[in-house]
Length: 323
Image 1 (cartoon, one colour):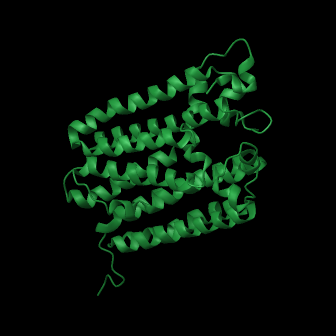
Image 2 (tube, one colour; image 1 turned 90 degrees about the vertical axis):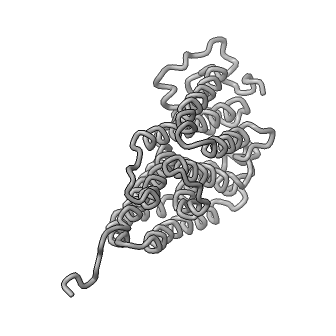
């Protein structure tokens, strides 16, 4: 695809890809989607390790790898939206969400930057392979293939009503599964069940983006889920996911056993104002920034309380401590 398809690429000179623009392409506001899977994998690992020390260094390596891959996904999305002409100044109000359009960055440099992020993640992954075996590599390779199919194929997944499911499963499921195996040496498919709240949180981030961008996506002939549903139905689905997400966290913490349930009342009090604000958000282009901030806050809060609930399984809690 020729970058000249975007009108801003017709300028004679491109701007340099500075560290500030690299950070904008990496989109730190989406990083909770990459932190949560590793956090939950660490929480689940404590019970499996059964008294053995959790490797803090490995946990940090996995966290950096996850952030690098999330940053690569964000950069690749920006790159392909630019070269395909999906993002323009007319349909994209937020300069930080259309970095190439607003800063006239050479798209080739952005593509190289995305590849460099993936290479760095792979190099760090060599330590994970040495430490935990080849299974995390296999899972990571599946994830990398999905990353490119998501934005770069002839019919990208991001142009289909599958984006929320695919992104949720890849980031929330596969990263949690690979991180758990790397930390414990145990491959356990049931980790995917425990990672369901993470999948929902990541899917909600994508649904936030797509619902706010319905008009732009219609113009670009993208058949996203909100485009097919319409904003009213998309918001109803959005609200249903929020409630399901919270209920699922409560159920899984209780099922995990022990005293984890003790964190749930605090969680409900903490997330109520965030969830209420997010439900009230109209999810239109002008409310996009606020919706992302609210969705990010909800991801952080629920992931933190969910991890705390899983970690608290050893608490000897009794309703009648004096009996």
